[in-house]
Length: 461
Image (cartoon, rainbow, N blue to C red):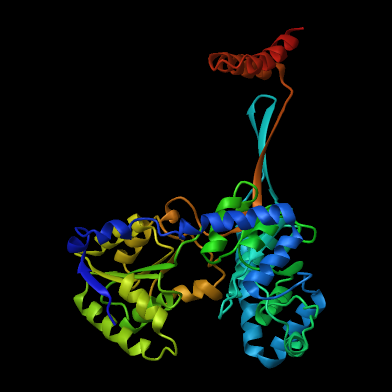
């Protein structure tokens, strides 16, 4: 196993440093393919969705909605066969919802008297409909459903739908095999990953559709005969899903465009090498493009972490993705001091930032200096994986440097901040009208100026 190890001074002189600080978004080579999918769904609706499901998923579906009764069965089955997982999902959802409800309280409504008899205000109201996308590869990320549902519900969204890629219903599998042998077709029932369906029931999702890929994003953005158009779409996905979200933005709101996942760990010799190695590997196992970074002032810790990585990765049943990630995108930086480490972290603006130090003045100083990150994990015990699953934080976070200007998925993605104005004091109205008219005429917008002046003139009558 190889992971690049460089002094900060030497690293910053390399060409690789330029790429290190550059955005790492999805491959734009998929743009034309995704545009075609979006246009087809926008113009042909459900017919296009059926064709895309047949082409991409090899499933000839005539309907997409998975009945509530089936989702309830999936939840009951999960509770019976995997009771500890069922409890863990409930625990995660409960904490995520508690955290999101606390977030909601920070969005206050107010009205203030900005001039005598002139009142300006704001109110925060939820969007009406939200769509959540949950990918379903070999290991479906059902926890992302919790992360999308909790803030939407805390915000007060009226209707929440889920789109997740279809799978062959277990009962249909045998029937289809028999039908194919006899050159017959059967009507396939819409179905999806069973754990995701169970989570959708636990999280009280209104409607679930067996629909994946860019076509699912298109359906939620434009609406079809059976899929409602939503106001906001959130959730992770592959490069086709990410590109679809980018292209429909403006037609609907989105959370953000996510690139490959990242962790940046700042540690000193007080850190446990085994814990640091485990956190690096946890990020690296996502996919080969994942980026795991350690910045430290301790050569001793570097040596120990490398040994631990070798030891721990040997326990992975499928280590290939993690190995490739560490080799191609992993990095260990030997810094002259931790101030240098936090400077690099702020410039990198990582998705996850860990400060693995004892509770000292040094740690407090670094926490205060940290300003660009998706989520911050403070101290040895605050494992990033806790934020992924059960600590209440949202794990849908900005990547590729976008933490410089945005935060992670939260209640704010489902809330509109609207402003209000009411006025009745003539003296204040005259003053506002005079200044407004002057600015309007200076900009060459005579209609604007007249709309202000007419109120000033009328107030003189």
